[in-house]
Image (cartoon, rainbow, N blue to C red):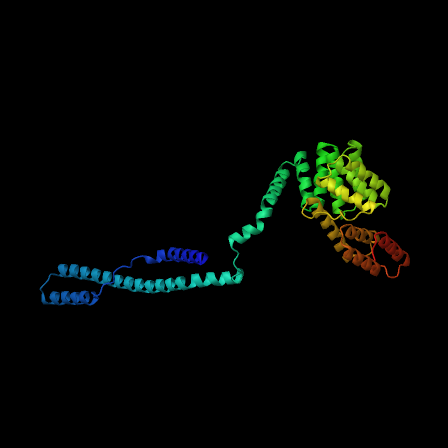
Length: 358
């Protein structure tokens, strides 16, 4: 309602502004036509001259005065007629403005706007964006600042982990790379870059990610993030004994009740066959990240099922998360992708037996 009141007010002001020049007061039009009177006066002057009642010079002067007044009367009549015609045109223009402006504005809005769009109350929009506003605003501000000061290594190092936490992995890789090129090598930046590469690869420690992790450990052998992903890489390579040793060494330096400590404990349980405490807590950032990576891997294999290692990782991930039904479904989907490859089917069945699937 307020919107339409504003529209009506603006329309009224617009029409008033357009009609203002047309509101000029017209000249008064005489009700009596004096032309006949002056014509009769000239005739009387001629009669008086013929009778000798007026001198010729005086008669000539009187005729000139009467003729001047007659011409003046004719001019005023023409002006009055013209004013009357202009007044009619002004009235027509006024009517067109009063009717045409609102109708034209409505037609334009109806054509280019969205009159059928439902209302979006401000409170509802604020509730929808309340959670992300502060973070997205901060990211936008930092990005704008980095465009102005691209050599700010601290800025790149600050925004890189934020990119990782928000799922913008390619941008995180770029930010970590720029931070390293400006600030130089450090275990924290290198391990962060390795984590970003791993996240971009759906949780797989790729060769490039492993190189970053090894560089981080060369700088600082006690860097816990690099140690953890080194153990993950060994587990993904199938070297369970080495992975277990690395996890146990890392667990000895981390409080067991902390989130990283609980995550490592679950990995140790998985490798030792105790899967009861392995399911990650989705309310934690690490648990949500694990679930997200497994979901992305599942979607990737749905589009392209030719990746055997991907299927084996997906089966293992669902089993580790305590979702045996999805693990068995992943095994069946994998077998459907390699129906004519007996060797690959044998590998899938062997992995399913190791995981304890039916």
